[in-house]
Length: 172
Image (cartoon, rainbow, N blue to C red):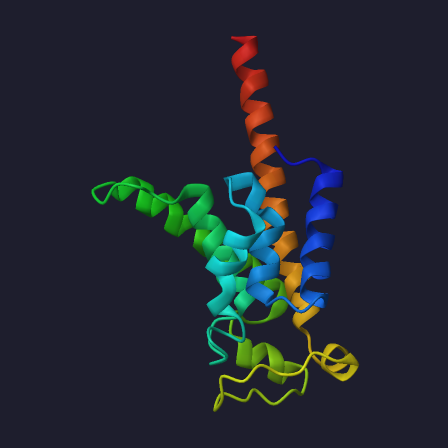
């Protein structure tokens, strides 16, 4: 269950983690990890390779990868033969990513960088130095905030639907 203040705190926590040097995917996943029984260290490890558009290849934005990871934690099937569970997870992924894309124009790291006039270098695994200029020109902190907001809103909507369903069941 996620309350409005908790929602704001989680979004803020994701941005703070990013500003501390964690990757975009790490920051978003870690802000919600406790809801799924993950400690911070495990969340950071799981999400570590997705930064920079997956290993700095500038493919799917790390914040979007975080949404995929969180969707799996939320609805991922645990039995190979569970086609309905797999479909439910895929549907949630599609909904979350479509919302992010509508708000940000793309789910691709290179596109998001280029929209802000940042060269989307792919020829090295070397992460960029985090300094004032890095944070000034890059849209990444805003994308971290956006992805965290998308997931927090999803959780809030799920809460509202569950509460409505419980109220309807009580009336019966």
